[in-house]
Amino acid sequence: MTLIAIILATLAAGIGSVWVAALLMGVGVSGKNGGMMPQRLLSLAAGALLATAFMHLLPEAFNSEASAQDLFLTLLIGVVFFFLLSKAELWHHGHEHGHDQHAGHGHEHGREPVHSHGKPGGGWAVLTGDSVHCFGDGVLIASAFLADMRLGVIAAASVLAHEVPHHIGDLVVLGHSSANRRVALVKVSLAGAVTALGGIAGYFLVGQLQDWLPYFLVLASSSFVYVALADLIPQLQKRLTARETVAQVAWLVGGMVLVTLVSGMAHSH
Image 1 (tube, rainbow, N blue to C red):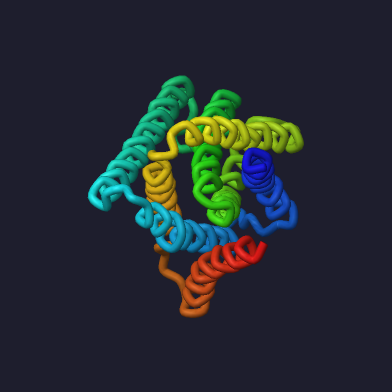
Image 2 (cartoon, rainbow, N blue to C red):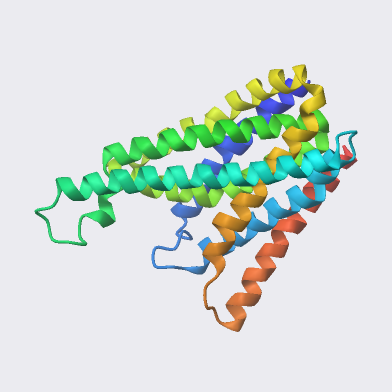
């Protein structure tokens, strides 16, 4: 029963987030010229991630018999690890970008780099990175389900929320590298489906290592905290009008409320 729930939840989070992103882009809320909807989606995702980490995953981990000092150390190591992972990704994209500039040195400076990420090679690089990221999300969702069914539903909903803005970016990149938008949607959906593979792997891995479950939950928390504080929130640090700022904060709080509501509904069942 737990394995079935993990598979369904990971498919919903992995593929569902792609289709929600495509729907938002289809109805014109992706904001080509810096519209407010992407900012609101980022705010919603950041609130959901922070609430999941600090209100659910971490308390569950610290209620175990594991040493608090060891759990805090795991949290610290996790944050540093995801920082290094992001640095490696930036280095990879910068290296690839440099090759594109060198190959197109005959073009006017500043024109080609804007679209270099849209070339087929860049599209596959995005898909590869997205697949690895989705696999990790699946493992984290499985860890939460094995701790508590309610936590699993919360984690899956949080992953879905924070992946929507990310997949909007993926679809934009893949849209440049493919003349057919449906092909781009299928490719990103397949990458999202890797979340289910991560969930299955996480189910069998964590099932054999129950004593390590609190550490998996803390690692999940470190991922959510890092993505929220290092990736999402910095994109929200822009000078806005008072009305736009209130809306931004409201969506941030809305993400936290969303997590609370999902938690309550899951608990009632």
